[in-house]
Length: 245
Image 1 (tube, rainbow, N blue to C red):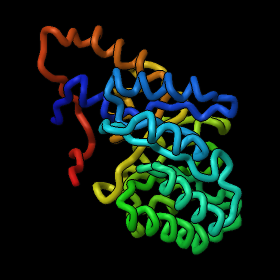
Image 2 (cartoon, rainbow, N blue to C red):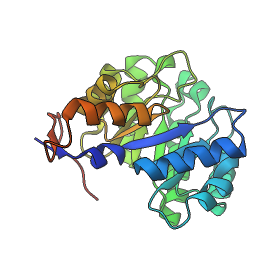
Image 3 (cartoon, rainbow, N blue to C red):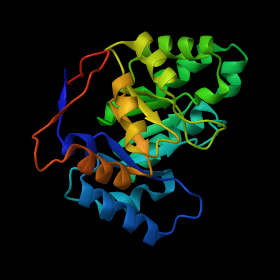
């Protein structure tokens, strides 16, 4: 049974502000909070990559750029350019949205080609790549199929949702995605995760990363819940062992 400290939990959180009206002051606040709580990264729109990477310089907190967000309805070439541009401007993690239209057309070769090309750019730069499915629009069979493609292509993570669709992360989706990829690819749960119960449920289901804007609230609740002044770590049942790379 894996054991976690509060800092381990913090390092599973992608602290998120993807709002269209987010200002430079909002980005500074996001980065300051990420430093205070030692979150894994800040999840931001691509255009904020340069600012956030500068604000986080000298820390171990990543700058995660969202590509073709939130709809995924741009060409592969556009996604490639945006990925390269984000990395050039300091992003050191990439989350991109698949082309859901092509998936609905049954064009799985397109989905695989898109994934292969974006993952290749990320690998060349040593940058983790997360593939956003947006499960609220997918059937169970479609989710399985994209997960099977991911198992072959090997991005670092597959991700449940953008948080801007008609639904967010569910325990069922995390379990389904993890059941397909096993230990070959990690799972990121994102979308609507707002409290410690949701957070722990996603980890128990097999998620290794949580994307949310409620990270501070969650960590404070976990501190209170587990009385961290009295214990060294928290143990959680998981269906799969943690992956180390």
